[in-house]
Length: 389
Image (cartoon, rainbow, N blue to C red):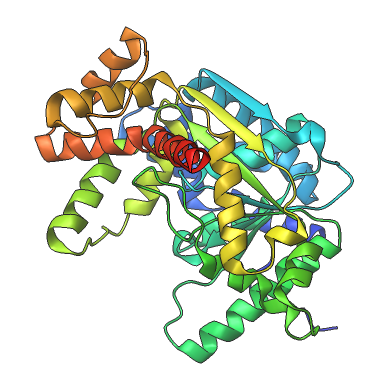
């Protein structure tokens, strides 16, 4: 039987051993391991220990023959990474859901690699099966990276196709694969939009939702029936501190000033590494409730329902209040908004992160950190004005 999803799906268990052996011989992975384990080692000396790194990889991965075994092997590395880069991880909401059911997790998108990592970290620690992960083909340019991601339950979203007809075919196949995964008992994670919310404003792109619903056409289903069958659940992921905050602010400013922004060849890779290893402070992962049929009448109504749950789950942190206060003091922006109380430590750390930045970049960074608080204050004002009418 032909495997119609072979070019986009994660690896199957019967493929794992060959992929592991290929990775254990990969020079790029050996280089990365040596640099990770011996960061102070001179570059010329690293070359001499590469064979040892290859032997170490083959020895450590000799017993891995399934995707689940690979994820178990990877789990302690993820644990150490999170311990080194976070102060605390708070996971809420899974107690209201069922581990025996498959869900379509739709989350906000702040970090390229950390967002799906935190979803599966949360599920794993709760004793749940991990999810399949949607990831753009722009992040899989290197074959070793692609191998690792597909071993780790990632499937490919082909974003780089220019031809409209071919792109539609690929989107239909992607939608069908997601539906097939859910029907076979595998939960799926997908971001609410194609790119990260660099401005701090989480807003669902209806194009993503329309793609998800494509699989229902061949079944003769309407939007509501298709999405109800996929059981979508909003998930909020919130980082106290964003390791990529300065880079995002600079990109947004460049786009505002010139109308465009050209990424360097290795920019996504550097963003991934910085997002994984940089200090993030406290992290909140909130799993919401399944969307009802009444909320799934159209892509627009579904987007509004996702955004509302994300906003309701969002935790307002001292750094956001400190950012609003500094916006008011330095740039006379949002002067009528109530920043509320915040601790001096958050204020001092924010000032330290902005040290040496040009005023426009400082303002853009502060706007991003303050965005969730400003959104919440605006929503409160709307609710109060509506109750008075």
